[in-house]
Length: 189
Image (cartoon, rainbow, N blue to C red; front, side, top):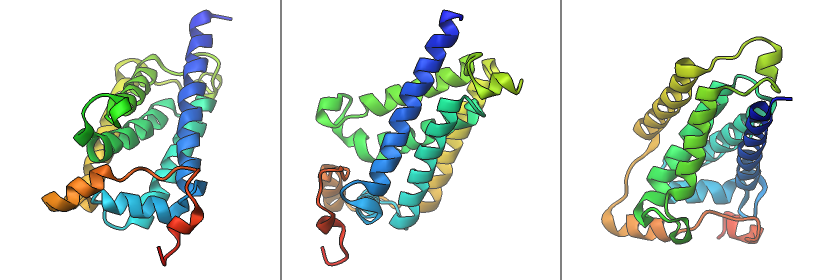
């Protein structure tokens, strides 16, 4: 077994598993969909429930596809898109470092996804088994281009920045976690 193919599989498993965990947390975590929807709306995204479900489907879907090594450039584009939205709306006001809720972590996931688009999934993948590997410039262009385009379209259609006071309050809001009580996501809360 080629060590590069093994390394690419490990990278796909790590990023794919991380994306699945994020998607499941947005869906089933303490705040559930209602909590995620409220958080997205606090960031300025209209139709928070739609955005929450889109995030869940994209994160879980991209994660599964990366783990399988199937349509890898499109799966990578899903990661790039989700991470770019997170960087711009949730983390950018906090600077670079993750320990200050900055965009460091989401940028690394997006860059790794673009790299997976460029390298391809390796031979230990369904893309390789099906002889449908698109890597190199094409894979990288799809991963980066579709991810950035998806982000731009989402922001153009749904993002409505808030006034200065509301924006400061939203930037201090935290993403719902599994530890939060489900009472916080109830309509009465």
